Length: 535
Image (cartoon, rainbow, N blue to C red; front, side, top):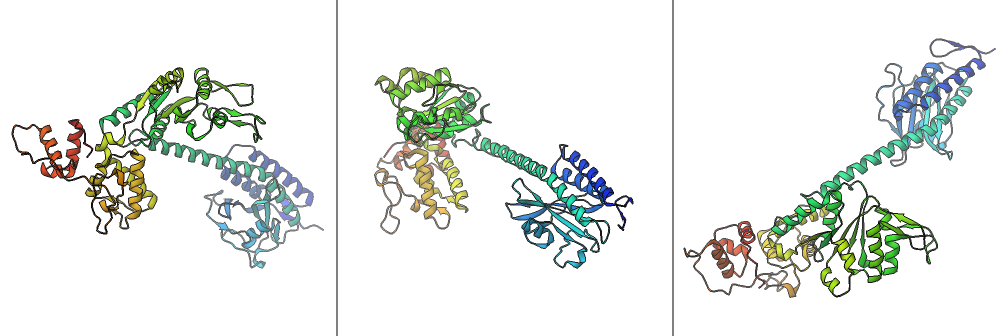
């Protein structure tokens, strides 16, 4: 004779058939919850509520495996008194306690009475220790355990533990796919948030206030041009010596344009031979040449809707110039080895350190391509023409090195004087490398003139460091005859030039003669358009 048991709500279960019927209705309700668009916690809590209210399975818990941290995390829990409440932050290691053993063994575990199992960990402080416990694995499509569904039958010494276990296994199977989809959805939302945050960081990094440091007339002119051209799709040609920051300007144009949410793709045209350059820019079809084992999109297609930065555009051959011209004029291309015409919508930003007008006159660069590229030209001044920016630029670059090394770094006035006395043929890149080396050589983090090393042929004099070496450049001593700086017949410009002449064009010394600061001297040199002499 079968003993009758109470189901939730005070209704008796008089037979196995009645239990199966109720469980079938529960599964239908579970499927209904799974079909609704909810957050993962709402979905799981709703299913546990069905198990509690209609199936006699109380204190339901869903535990989800976190592969990144190798832990089993409580994803949802149902409490009768609060209808779910806030999910507690409880974790298990695989194999830890009964729940951890369900995950590690990938098998169901059934306890006739919790108090009889010493390995049971009641971390949730939820269970009646005199009632049974059922834990079943939630498996992925390959049969691997990705979580645990656990609940407690509401009657002691239940005759239907096997049937309830089978029912919970069926519920876990229904739950499996939805858990995977919801987890992937939340991961996708997390990735989207991280992507948006990265975009914001990039826009801040390449904002007009941070893209290039400098307040000289030449850089102010560059900033104004970038602001104006960024909002349009016009082709831009960036001109300037190596190391002046052409790629940084290209980034600033893209990330302050309406195309900022699309790709910014770069290619150094001088780094590849012509045959590989064509494949790199236009892509190729499978079998187009040896080792072309699959189809590949070129940089134009990758940048579709965004910006393509072609660095060192002056290095490409005459033959390839003709192929590039067609893409720029028509906005369409064919992959290497293919016959299909592909249309692309790409903004072109090109850069070169060559004088393209001279290259056109000498027949080394196509005139029609030059005019196609030279819609909006931005000329970056070399660092030697904006030495007034060196103190601010050096501080900015040193902050970058400081973050890399994880320690505070500081430049002394003597170090700044040495930096401002150099003509920097390698421009900003050379200055950055010089500062990084000086930071490495500075144990205390204070960079003085003795750790600033410049090439011998670029020194304007030498000062002993105390061990016989001359590790930095120093201006030559003054050779001009002494001039009365208090002469009332001299205007401010003449007085400033005279002070610079007397001090060998060392601005810090001239500042002391005139009772000024080095910054004031540098500002007056700029505003009065005084060319700093090369000694």
